[in-house]
Length: 257
Image 1 (cartoon, rainbow, N blue to C red):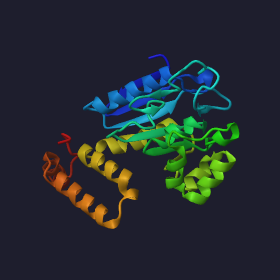
Image 2 (image 1 turned 60 degrees about the vertical axis):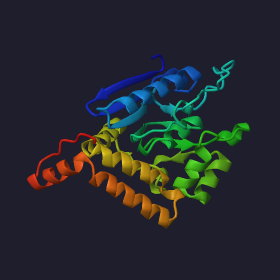
Image 3 (image 1 turned 90 degrees about the vertical axis):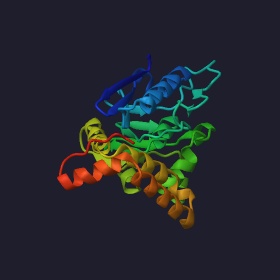
Image 4 (image 1 turned 45 degrees about the horizontal axis):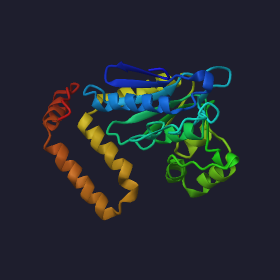
């Protein structure tokens, strides 16, 4: 890979945007590499959670500046892949949790790939913006509706129509950022990923899937979904191991089945 690095440590995979000299801005080649990295996460039987991070430069780090408007001239695919959408990620169907580890500025499409993840860990110096309206563009890679669903209409409308940046601490207050890192954002994300990776993979996968669609369901449908999930885990191989480990006061050994 040219613009993306992939690493694995136990059950945790790390995908690194590695185009810092271009503020990690996306072109189609980079989007294809991200999609390939997501494929590796999804197909890796021993991978349970992934971290999306970025190589940055000081003193003003940029997590991702979105689409490479300058260097993308002649790029007929516009940073899109057939399965993943923008950056190979924003429309990609996934079964495993992704944590965005943000240190710096995530703007436009760079914020949209963060919003496509399941959790956001951010350093206190980070900020987020959907600034497309400043350039007669729209946040068409999921940013408009994902941001609105997470932080609510009034706060989202303010950001979307002004293009202003949202500081990390305010993002944390609004529920966008799940954890603030005082120093090392990578260590904070790794700690979170490690906790998730110790849990039962089947239960994690089903819970993630249910939580992702919960806001679309009325109570009746939500109860039906919850009952189906309970039946699925109660008939799995890992339910026996989970109960045994609890009674024996030891760490469970999961099979994912």
